Image (cartoon, rainbow over all chains, first blue to last red; front, side, top):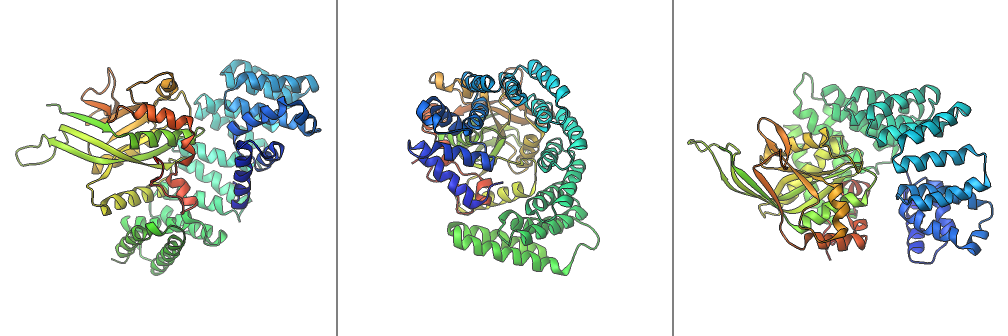
Length: 303
Length: 220
């Protein structure tokens, strides 16, 4: 996840680079730092940079990191020849490297040659069993072939060893949601929240999952997690604010014993007023629309 | 007795949904189609709608929804509420008349359960609603020449067999046409201009409410 200031800096550098000026190396470095996926721009301008021998010589030792970055971006754009050139340059410089071999595996993946990629990764894993990136390539291959169950199994196995890998837990949650295995997804979120209790996005994600699962208990829990997300994000997160309102409506519509809690209306109207204030500031043409919807939700709740 | 339904999609709606998918090449995307349904239902003598008859579904606009977490409910329900409320307030007789979906992987031609569920939900208020699934094969050959075929596959809901693709061997009693003959050439032009970068979906609106999911300036 990228913060707002960083996103703006990235966009500015991207505009400069696309416009023909700008510092390509600086842009590439920021893309690496933020770990964002901008393959088309990276591939196009990265290749131009690498093919320009005077510019390339100014890069110093960074040039090899850039070769790797551009190779992966080229694979993402299915520019297999260009990727092959970059990988070739890396192979020449680092003939015994496992990291370069991994790139070669990715090249096979991009080509759709799953068998070759798999046998290459197996060999590499035999010598490097603790390389997390190699394990993740296998998971990626399963996903790419539409084998979601296989990807889930592989991820679970991966997490037995690398249990602190939050991104993997998050990815696993997403895969479970795609398979509609909500309880298993919930377990992943619980792990994430346990290990990073102040991360608003995990609370938000869990709230959305609970709402999707439905039922009075889950909706009430969702509301709590939405409230936590609002607190952690300083009331700035629109999804969490709207989430409170959606929960209010859903709880009202779900018949059940003891469904009325006096403070729920307060929470609902508070969230509503924050939303309206934000819309007045940033999206005035939708204020009437939002107010109308929130009023209806509030009325339904009180009734 | 089997009726037939004609789905006519305006280039505004059509180009927007394809650009939405192209903006987010690495994920699945979805959205709704806006328009009106006209025609005669084959009701019984008591005047009850049976949903069968001869209809025309005119799709004049589309609203891009999400490019992440398509399977989660709360923001989907919010989006449906806001869009529904908006078009009702415009008093133009427009409402949600369909749903579009583009799969994450380029060779995935299956209609996912998420798409089916959302389609089911929409058919409750609009029985003739169709699901439009982006067809990557067709999109791939778009640049090769002018074609009148839309780059989407239409699925219609049949009473017994559920969602069926409009194709030989599939659903028969429907047709999908592009309203304007220029639709695909406009689409090609916009793609080469990278106009997909301008598309705003509901996801982006939630991240920054100053961005407008109506995309009023997209076709300027």
